[in-house]
Length: 215
Image (cartoon, rainbow, N blue to C red; front, side, top):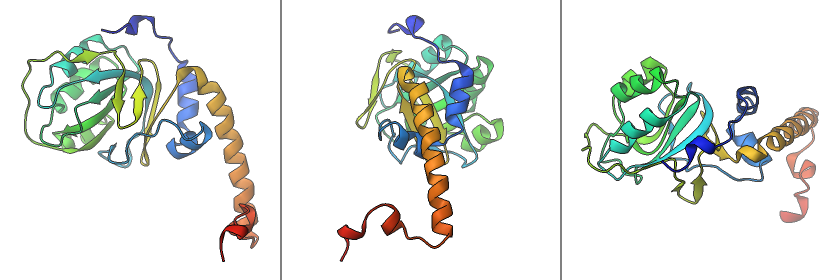
């Protein structure tokens, strides 16, 4: 399983507060870390997601690890699945979504595809995926659950904070979350001041000190 029983739980109120800032602000406030590839997007732009990561590795074309993960997950977990990035299979659909909802799982982020997308949207289960595929999978390889997974250059550990919105998904270290919240709040205040000055006629070239970079 990989030690998920020992992971520190992020206070739910902190997670919800942080999620309110939006993924782009959080990524910037955290020092431009944790942004998953732009191809991993919500099935519906209205979907929002926040929770603690339960990393899952499932070989392409096999979804046994997803069944394991649902059985092992705790309420508030987000299944963060590396399925090799393939769009050739749909290892997760509305049956697994129902099983996840019943266990209080907060959503799915998958480096791969899903199926039953209309049903998933109607169910209100947050899913962020690279795309959709109607092709089913076998159930032979248990994969890994709770061990770190790497999606592009981002390594996701059990217990990391996972936040998703219409712009994408950001994964942040749990230990840094309070500091990231404070930095995000400061960034929001700074941007509010900048917007007021832009509305008053000032140019972003001047506000950001970019004049010397352009002819």
